[in-house]
Image 1: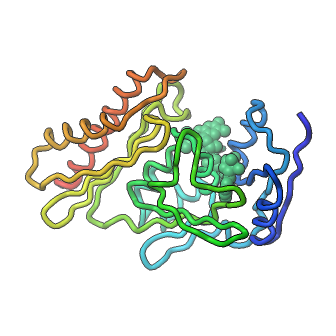
Image 2 (image 1 turned 30 degrees about the horizontal axis):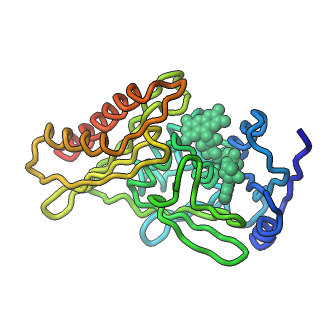
Length: 282
Ligand SMILES: Cc1cc2nc3c(=O)[nH]c(=O)nc-3n(C[C@H](O)[C@H](O)[C@H](O)COP(=O)(O)OP(=O)(O)OC[C@H]3O[C@@H](n4cnc5c(N)ncnc54)[C@H](O)[C@@H]3O)c2cc1C
């Protein structure tokens, strides 16, 4: 395996120029995924663009309607920051469930979504919270809804020459109740076998139920449906399981067969929804 050339741009313009001009360059965020894939012989890019020196990418700020998370904000900060916990508690909970503190201290919010793995934890919560991904290239900037960001197995909307600069997340509606259920079949710190982020948002005359599923299809899945406030909890759970069933297409692997994962997926959805409805009933 030949040595990797690591570039250290000092500005966003330098970074995007490198990504435009180099044929097959990869952005280096926290390096947790990239290093493992290279060690496993699955990554062949010879140029890595380390964006650590680019100003502003590690900033986490509040906006008029929520949070702006710079691409280099570590996952551990997303878990522990008081503003994230206050404005988007579901996001804080979900970031706190990724792997273990060593990974969370190093891995970045931008690298997490750009990794594009269908089992990632945070995208499930970002989908139900309706986050937006901000992308920059030498040609300009654009925004993509996180719900459209994952385009296929290990594929994202990031085009050649682009990098993720930030993720914006609207404030979680105050009356909403959310939770993240992560079910593992190997070890406590492992990837999910099946996971579900659930958010129940009371609106005028109905409750908007939003589901983000992880590990249950080739990409993160986002689903939503409404229940009336007088709907029986059992009916609401049945409806959630029906809608989740129609979207699940699990990939069998060492964590379980497709059938086993689908069973765990139903359990994650049910557990999450029961929790949210119980909290709403208060
Ligand atoms: C032992 C272990 C356990 C893990 N367990 C989990 C888990 O339980 N749940 C989970 O969700 N994840 C898990 N991961 C996956 C993953 O490493 C992290 O989720 C992490 O967030 C990736 O972020 P990073 O900054 O380290 O990315 P990197 O490794 O730096 O990059 C990952 C990919 O994203 C690209 N990239 C990085 N930053 C940008 C950017 N700003 N713009 C465009 N592209 C970019 C890179 O080129 C690369 O393709 C695990 C990883 C390891 C090593």
